[in-house]
Amino acid sequence: MNVSLKKYVKVLPAFLTPLFLTLSFPDHDQGWLIWIALVPLLVVSDGLRPSRSFCLGLAVGMISMYGIFLWAFSIPGLRFYHGIAVAFYLGLYPAAWCAIVSSGRRTGLAPVIVAPAAWVSLDFLKAHAGFLSFPWASLAHSQHDHPAVLQISAITGEYGVTFLIVLVNAALASALLKSGRYRQQVVAAGAVLCVLIFGIFQLSTDSPPRYFRVAAVQPCISPGEQDRDPGQANTLYRLEGLTTKAALSLPNLIVWPETAVLNLPSSPKIVGRLEGISRRHDIPLLIGASERVKFNNYSLDRASNQGIRSYNGAHLIHTASGPPQEPYRKNVLVPFGEYLPLSDTITWPSWFIAEGFQTMPGDGLTIFTLKDGTRPGVLICWENLFPQLARREVRAGADLLVNLVNDAWLGKKHAPAQHNSASVLRAVENGVPVIVASNWGPSLIIDPRGRVLQRSKGFFRDTIAGDVPLQNKKTVYTRYGDLFAWICITIMFLVFICIAVNSISLRKSTGKR
Image 1 (cartoon, rainbow, N blue to C red):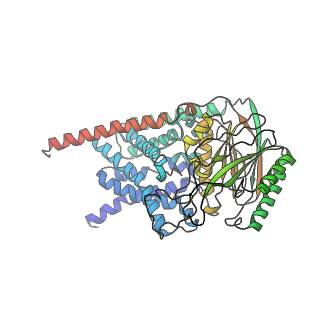
Image 2: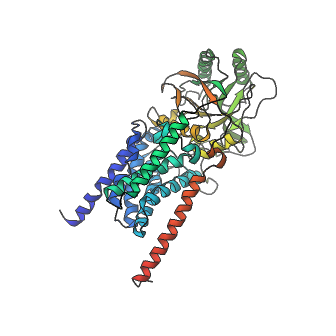
Image 3: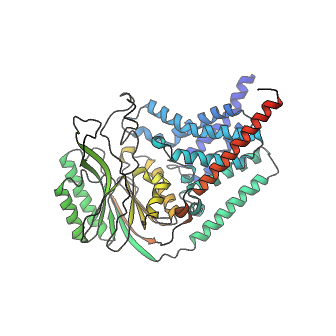
């Protein structure tokens, strides 16, 4: 075997990482694999120059993205070149991580310090990158079925769980490479032990002051079913029947999923019917609805949508007296799905992006108030992926969070299960229950410790109901936010200084200028 071929063969074990990462998330849901998933990549990249580590990380990252997001090809209009573009962008994060870890190794910095801090810093960037933000399937999400591990996120946010996972991977890789005297493995084992002890203690100390009964309706409205009047009438009739079924459990609130109703509140007839349903059962309804509001000259297609603004929102239909409460309008929209980013400065090619009606983001926060004083906050669709949005609502007084979801356009695959895993983290981070009302399911009722109390069967018409504990105290994460992530970013700043100083010293010692 010639030398060049040997080089390629040596990197082959690194491609176990995409396999392990893919299997760690739903639908396979083998979360234990995440604790060893990065080991092959770390071992193979040992000794590589940062530039080569970057290329290896990019290849591994792109393949991983295809494995985890294979369901994306069920989205209407998604082509192979869209997949390449998305995989390349998301692959840049593990590529940068590999390059940073390699640079740290050459500087003499231990991977158990650099690797987890770098991954958390890059995850934080990915969640705050403007229209390029996409914090789907973070490493922490793979642990959604392991509440003892997740309890640390009440202090650190999900970034603490991610840090721990990468720390263990780095320690195992160092053991295989026989790097150091097992101090790194002792540190990792101690960290895992502390997290598990804390988690078990947290799970055994529930003492909620009161319970709140909530129900969610899962209507299974197919894409395009509401495009014509008969379809809208049929879906409303279906929702009414499921609501009657849900009301039998005597909940304090019944939740309908995202965009269950179209063009609310511009149709007085539909509004009247919804109020009648709420009045008949004497139960408030929290409804996901599209909303069109007159406004001057806002639309992609000004000829056909002149003077119209469209919102994706949530409305409270209640029986209590008093003025109606302002709706919550989705703040963070899906780029290229609900709006075209930078449309004022970039003319996107029609073969790459098909123009459609532009949805407007909401610019405010609405926490609804029920007649018993309970205050639900709302996250719509992928807003549950952003920890800062959930924290903002709980800080503003929300007793529980409701995630209104319509994942029908993602197809009947494992995307909804991946999506829902983030809601488990949001519950633990803020110490509040989270109710996922999903159009196609599965719908969930999650307690403040991240335990799923009720779960519907996916892709079937169904209702779920359950009692959730409401707690008055705010978690460390709710009070202080992403402090842990900022500590990791600070560590990386110091790491970059060390790398720069080492590079300058090497250049001087070799006589290079």
